[in-house]
Image 1 (cartoon, rainbow, N blue to C red):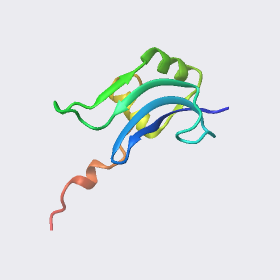
Image 2: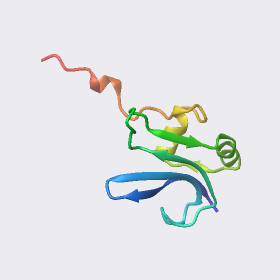
Image 3: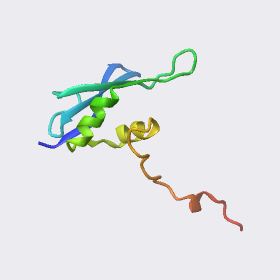
Length: 100
């Protein structure tokens, strides 16, 4: 059984709220999971803050037993120093304007 750390969507239309869960890779996105390891609210509150709550000890446990984070979860964990940040997907060379 391959375990993935991924986001499970909740909330209503245009107001997403996510749970970060450890789940079997064959389970549906919003289906059965093994453990809730955090929450993520991408909608900023009145102070402009996006709320993220993580159970760092449980995340480290799941990674130690071989769980693979999804792309977005790896990005979030990289921001908080739990995982090394993932490599950039764009080339800096392409962002330099051409001289015509």
